[in-house]
Length: 490
Ligand SMILES: Cc1ncc(COP(=O)(O)O)c(C=O)c1O
Image (cartoon, rainbow, N blue to C red; front, side, top):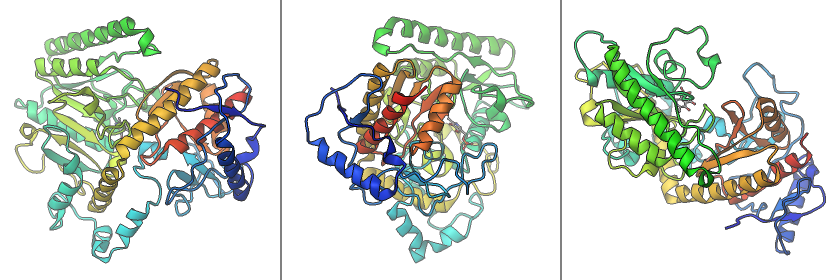
């Protein structure tokens, strides 16, 4: 089914460089035109407008980008990793506003960590309620002095979305410390006396964080690891699928079988070396490493291998969790009754942490511990976020908007194969490859100056990590802007 149709119009590249009123007028013109006859157009160089781009009836969203300067602008200081400075007071919904007043459609959402958009009114209301004030003011040492209602609050929030079979929960501050402590939990579960040389098996291209233990399992970019000593832990190849998937069924099956075989070989080899694999860690979609997907069947077989060899199976849902693939947890797509022994989360969940099975409970207090162990104020916000996800059926929204986005990307890929390949995605967790790193980076910068924030990953991929309130019309808006960019791109 074609979800998007394109219509030729005279160049509207100016749309996002003019003042807001002009943007609104032109958007209104698009609405007026959208009822006219539409047709699909695949000619490179033409301006293409998606008919549904102009819907603006969102309670707390802006109606489109509004660019006043280049980004970073004069008020932003451009320092090393910093892209630009932001005005979070003015940011709303899917739109991030910078210090120069540029308003951008944010499809990267703070490295995939904004669940329901900027300044959601329901969250603003929550923090204004007097009975919540002490939760925001006082940050307790949760492991020893939790607030009276903390367990109830966890039941309302995290426990209400606990993955199948994982009844135990520990909250943490970030993704890295969640994985770091998940590794320790696995080693304690595997236990034998002393400090045995156990290992965690990870995959090439994986990203699990930057702390010492996590870094030993992170293999996405050399820069993360330079100068840091590491463990001799096994690293298995992760499938490199060929696209379009339906044309390479056999090749991809063979590729996945090769990787699984290597996993088993490594487990055996490391057992002989006396560095027994206590656990396997895997992302349902390798994210920082380049949005590398594998089939549900691959993960089902990997899960079986872990069970067969007595290794704990740790699923890292730090980036894939919280609804962006159309299921609350990406591993739900595998359709397993026993999908994991341990599962870590952070980002869209507003707090870090991990779920685990009962038998992974440490046998003494303080073995898994730190001062804060998360933050009850984030948990309060998360409970409301989860309410909204359920009430507004946002998982369905993600599936729908994701389909629109991916269909549009496939159309752009057909029209501009010199710039776009391997368009892929699940929910709004979409991406595509560009020819090389410099083209990728230039596309991201050009898009930013046209009012769209995108993210890179791997060597040459562009990834989409919008909020869960990213809707069809945002997808169309992006596709229009990007279509214009590609038409002029050199
Ligand atoms: C899959 C995955 N695991 C772990 C992490 C580390 O999380 P944090 O940056 O919160 O330490 C990330 C961060 O991007 C991630 O994508």
